[in-house]
Length: 398
Image 1 (cartoon, rainbow, N blue to C red):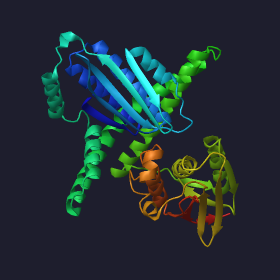
Image 2 (tube, one colour; image 1 turned 45 degrees about the vertical axis):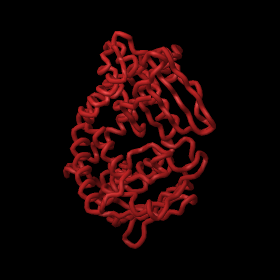
Image 3 (cartoon, helix red, strand yellow; image 1 turned 120 degrees about the vertical axis):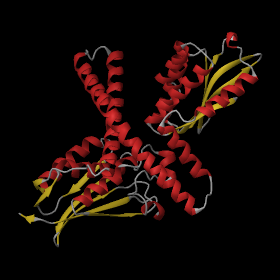
Image 4 (cartoon, helix red, strand yellow; image 1 turned 90 degrees about the vertical axis):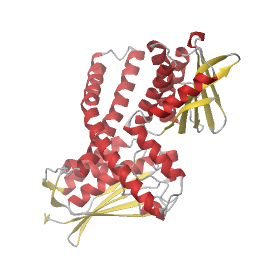
């Protein structure tokens, strides 16, 4: 296979990138717009299933020679576990779109081949393939996001001098900030509208129309994921531009925590939420922001611990300090990870390969807690779970 594009499937933005790269390659072959769209849609559907249900996915797009003809191909490799469904809607839909789709699985790895014959009228040969590959190279990244991925990959695969690494890291940070600021603001409105319309449609459609109702539920679920992702990116952008604002008010601490814990029970139906609340007091806080910070911490506890395990939430008021402790029975963290978990976009190698995420939640949580004059400390041991202790200055005791 002659490789023209390679995309690692790590987050929702990679779906858009895989779609656009498929269009780019098909367009250079001079396939019809309809054919371009069909092929790109098939790639996107398979990529989505891989991202949702597998690990370490990657998509390679290029040319394959089949006897005396050439075909536009996409090869997708990914790591799977025993729960991966060998037959699913995304794969089935892609199979209807392209003439050839092959899927094979071993105990730990999956492989999908999508293939579409290139018309003889395109006069494809080795010389033309070389020209197309060169043209793609000259065009460079098709988006700021791809540029960031390429630069990050280059940095991780080379051993540059420390000074050069610092220069590149600073440049990447500036590029990310600019991209996040523009992308998150542009995405926020249409995604919010999309989710609102999907929720309205769910209320209007008869649940007995099982297939349609099921599709709408999936649309609403994915739109919800996009809303969360966009909000996280907006928060990072606001923090970096000094626009992260608060609406603080006096709040009965125990009532606030009870309300928050109830919402966490809905967030983690497969886990046990235990809690113990100490003395009461009143605090001047932004309720929504503090709940957001706690949700980010509890969300991590849910993500990195097995179903059925317990997440414990404890509070105490002592020595002019209000303490909230969140403990889990999850995978724990190494000392190296503990030193970096509050850094923007940081994810450990294990978390990056096995769990989805952007490495934003704890960064935002630490900012919110700091802006409330609080502090956050973590104790953890690999394989033994983690414990987050959040301390706020006690204000007016009841």
